[in-house]
Image (cartoon, rainbow, N blue to C red; front, side, top):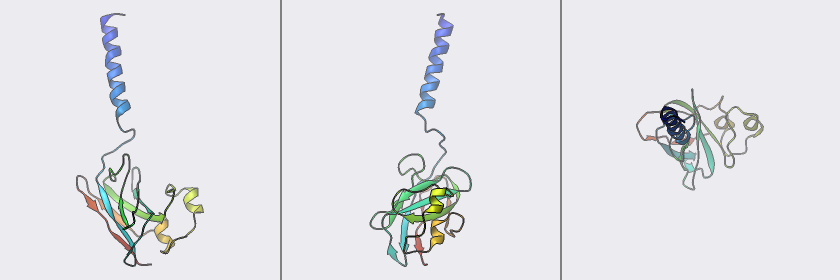
Length: 141
């Protein structure tokens, strides 16, 4: 193998290594945290999904105090900047928004079913790039 060919192979290997170690399909994210309550009472073990107008949704699960942190690509990395519709679903595995699993999962929570459905939720958030975004929601119905 000639030196030029060996150098070309070496460059390709370095590029492949760099690409292989990056977050596949990733985009910039900004930290997103908050608290979920129902009529002033923290909701534990509910799934919070931030669905952007374009891009990958981010999810999190509340702790005993109703606090959550959103993950999109890596643990607690936040959500992609922009406008998001927010859904709150009972604990357990989070179905993808607008999927058959989401449609099949009927209401089983103390709050209104509209918060569980992407096309009906009135919860929104504007995630700002480079900022720590705190979104607290108190579900009233």
